Length: 313
Ligand code: HMG
Ligand code: MG
Image 1 (cartoon, rainbow, N blue to C red):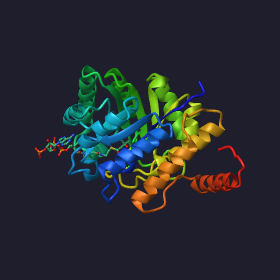
Image 2 (image 1 turned 135 degrees about the horizontal axis):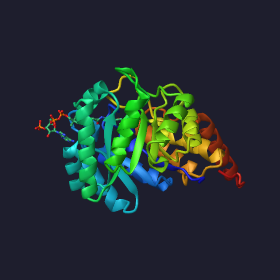
Image 3 (image 1 turned 180 degrees about the vertical axis):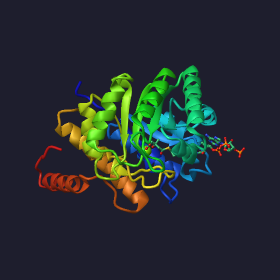
C-alpha cells in the first residue's frame, strides 16, 4: 500500500507547551487550515488538568466548535484518565488517546501515577471509551529512552503495546518523547513490535530533537508502518519531559513520503499557509528541516505565476 496516514498533532502537542496563550478562535482557525490542507486526522486538544497544562484549558469549548465546522474530520483528543474521558465525551469528542509512558518515573512526572497504575487506568479508559462508541488510540511514550531512567527496555514496550491492543486500542502510537531514537533503533523496535501488535494498528510519533525525525520515519516505513503523527511547523514537546524538542514536522514528512512514492493526501501549499498562520500566532519563525527550501520554491512559483507562467507545486 502506497498511502500513508498522518495525524497532525500541532493543536495539541504543538501548542501545549507554548508560554503565550492562544485563543480558542485561533486554535479553531489553525484546525481549519490543517483540514483544508488535506490533513484528515487531527489531534485537537487534551482534557488534562488546567493547572498542569493551562494552554489546553479550553478543550471543552474547542471540541464542539470543531465538530460543528468539520463534521467528517477524524479528530482526537488526549485524555490521561477516566475524568478526562468523561469531560471529553461530554464535549462531544469522537476519538480519544490515552498516554501511557513505558517507565515508572515518566508516568509519575506526566500523569502522577506509577507504571502499574497508569497501565490499568489506560486500560480502563480504553474500555470505557469503547463502550461509549468512541475511537481510540494509545500512546506508548518514552518507547526508546526516558529522560529520567535512560534506555527503555524493549520488553516493557512490547508488553505495554500488547496490553493496549488487548484493551481495544484502535491505534498504538509508539512515541519517541525526547527525540533520541535513530533509524537502527526504530527498525529494531518496530520489527519486534510488528511481531506482537498488528502492524496496521501501529503508528509512530517522533520528536526531532537530534534531527533524526525524517530518517526515523523512513525506517518506520521500511518496517511496514503507515500511520504517522507529525506537527505542522515542527511545533511541539511534552512539558514534563526535559529535553523534548519539537515534533517531526508534517511538511518534512510529506516531502519525504511524496518524493519516495507514497501519497499523503496533503497539499504542501496548504501546509505552508498553516505554518504562516502559526508563525504569526507564535511571533517567531517555525518549520522543519526543509522549510527554507520549501519557502524558496513557493516564492519561485509565486514569481512565475505573477509572470503568467504555470509552475507545478
Ligand atoms: P492529579 O493531581 O494526580 O489528579 O493529576 P487527581 O486525580 O489527584 O485530581 C486532582 C484534581 O485534578 C482534582 O480536582 C481532579 O478532579 C482534577 P480538584 O478536586 O482538586 O478540583 N482532575 C482533572 N481535571 C481535568 N481533567 C482531568 C483531570 N483528572 C483529574 N483529566 C492529571 C493527574 C493526569 C490530571 C495531571 O497530572 C495532568 O493533567 N497531567 C497533564 C499531562 C499532560 O497533559 N502531559 C502532556 C501530554 S503527554 C505528551 O505530550 C506525550 C505525547 O505527545 C507522546 C510523546 O511525545 O511521547 C502524547
Ligand atoms: Mg509528543
